[in-house]
Length: 453
Image (cartoon, rainbow, N blue to C red; front, side, top):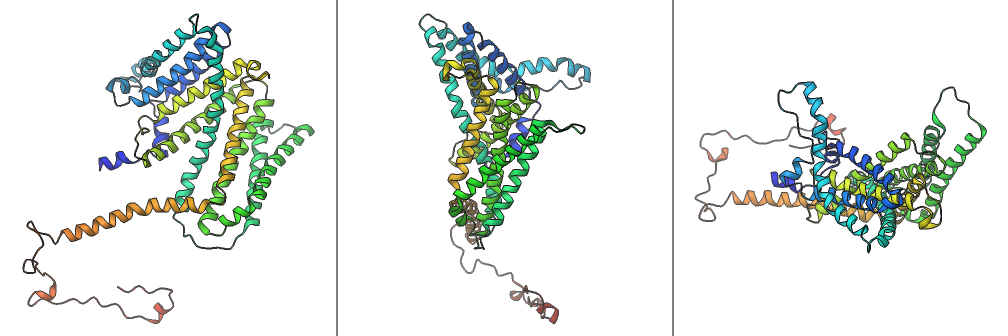
């Protein structure tokens, strides 16, 4: 039984519980502290080498922490250890900061090795000329991280919808593209207007809207709805294929709607980064929340994919550390874009602008994946069904084999003399109970189905 549980990939609930566990939650704080510290260091030209080495080193440190979770030392000094039994509340709070700092030792010490090597090389006379190229390479990875973010979010939204749709019957149905598309666009437009009102204009009961604010809200709503109308119009012929079956129609509408809601959110986030001005606490919190969602989505999809292929790289215990490794690399790419700015693209790009570009790449990735899959959802669901049916078939075969094994003795097949007939008919004087169905009455005839015992 333990082997079967170990062979199963971590579920979404496992990853969320692991992420929010009190023993690993302080690593989110470390990611935020180190990320902004290294960004501040990198803004100084002479310290850029240490900024590059810091981002790469700590990202590798968390990857090594995830890989070596089976080692006792690494596991102990990457989790907040519980307080001693019998300790008072005051004693627990007094020593809690020390236990938090101790939980940071494993990724910091493991990351110190690549940090030292990279920083030493980039500060030598021969490596000083490679500082800016190294920063440009780290900044260029930003496109890959944003693309992976869109890929992870799209696939993570697919998994629960696919699981539910695979249980539906693949029966033919009448296509209702018009009603489906209309409701799709109305939901997207409502979501766009509501989020713009809450996040950009700001909800205040006594606030009087200006004509400019109302115009900008209307323009963004029309822009978000227009994108969806264009996508639905271009893919009409392929959507007719998906709408011809009950399961694919339900999957296509639900999954497509969820994807486009996230696309709308990313487009609004990009708009806010380009026009929002200062980098406030609200934007920092939103980006941290989005990064955590991306980390969970990426590890969930990767864990499921690798487990299906027989690999056990991502588990419930180390998933958070793989995600933090990705998060640190992603933060390093954004920081390098903001630091280098015009030196890379000729355009002055601040930190908020760099994040805005990432949101556009992520939104474009999700749009492309949605467009690419429309029309071939049936193959997706059929594959999911076959994966669910095969284990059941195997269990049924094993049960049949077990029943046949009951007829085998220690030396081989039982003879007819060895088989004891213990049925009531074979026992002298025993009453025979016949399994006779109840008579069918007029009330039963009115029912659609009659179940005979």
